[in-house]
Length: 225
Image (cartoon, rainbow, N blue to C red):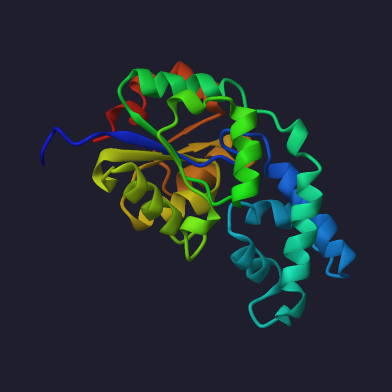
């Protein structure tokens, strides 16, 4: 394998770098409640990380009447937008991105958030100076656990799958990375436990960006490629 190819690290954003997992959970819970489709929050939380299409299939069943799907998505988006100005990064998230860049890694945000949400997420992170590439939902035909958004991130950043590591917070992140044989580092700050992430195939698990930063030089991230 040529050694002059760039190496990089792909990051999920929601629940991995920005503290949004439970905000999405509450927003979906309320959207479902408003349309008389109540689902327990714990069940919703475990589906966060999927795209909205697969999330609704997961929660309501693939054979359901889909006529209300667009209304549900719109309600979720409206409810979640109320939090945009209050979004906060998870501990030392921006410092982690900068530390990766300082080590010569190309930093890529592989998010399937809608473009208007990406603006709010970038503002919360305040690390544009070290981010090489950012994706959005418009870049993927199919959402996680399909690997489409990771494929788009690789293509847009000029990186190869064998030269990157993916950092995410859900089993859906681990599954998407596994489709491309990309090692996935799991963070538990999105609410999924260490055992579940490791059981899904994460090569290492840390509490949050701060914990990964503290161990960065001994982590799979700096061994990319």
